[in-house]
Amino acid sequence: MKNFKKVAAIHDISGLGKCSLTVIIPTLSAMGIQVCPVPTAVLSTHTGYGGFVMRDLTDFISDALNHYRKLGADFDCIYSGFLASARQIDHCLDFLSAYSKALKVVDPVMGDNGKRYRTFDDELCKKMISLVRAADIITPNLTEAAILLNENYPANGLNIAQIKSWLVRLSQLGPKTVVITSADISGEGISAVGYDAQNSRFWKVLNDYVPAHYSGCGDLYTSVLIGGLLSGDSLPIAMCRAAGFTKLSIKSTYSYGLSQSDGLLFEPQLPWLNGYNDFSGFESI
Ligand code: PXL
Image (cartoon, rainbow, N blue to C red; front, side):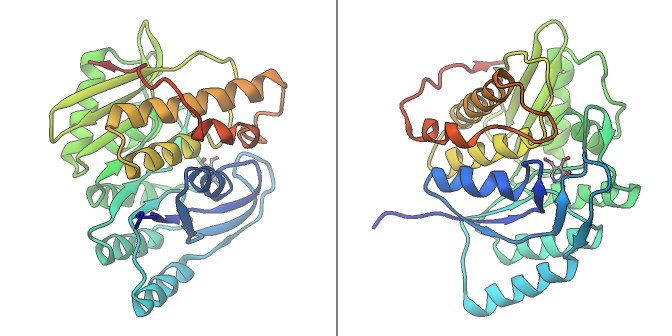
């Protein structure tokens, strides 16, 4: 029988401003993968809107895990993202050790564009390292990579040698696969760069430049990356699949002139995920 995959997604759910679970559930579902949401917080909007209200669900995560253990429930992948308190990191670590055979994906959501999100303090950022250590795959953006490595945000970008050294240093924290989703490579533009430490291979997929910034791009990218990897893609093919769908969603949103904080117009594009596409746009670096 076909092996239908299940992903436990430990992320927030925000009412307005598409990101986290409101992006992850439809995207992975369209790829034929079941998402089992474990909400870390409920927000009226994502943190980029003024005056948002938030309910922290820290204790819910451990209760949900206990219930899944009692049921003998299994997951093919545990995927953590936006966390509402430092204590949630301990609960995520319990999830990762309870499902040691699952693919452990940590998106160390902490900030973007050189700035931390409003709800992330020093304690949470410091503790994020322990979650990164337990992961198989991490998908930081450039801001998060800098925080994890205790480096200043490289406002003028990095050269290829520097970016490769950042990838290696991130993998030395624990994860055997590292993808920096928005590496600003001086003179080349924004690319996703990946490192497969087991085979010592580095990969790059260049993004098209669009003069706008939308919330939820990282969640969309990582969802498609996970969907690809769980379906048997190689790392560079999964990176191309993720880049292709993210690019299409960004360009479509831009073409309609939609508000940047509302997030991506990805819903009409979901059929792309099941079409025939060219995944050769990667480079070995
Ligand atoms: O996409 C990252 C993200 C997730 N969840 C919430 C956010 C953000 C980014 O702004 O605010 C609540």
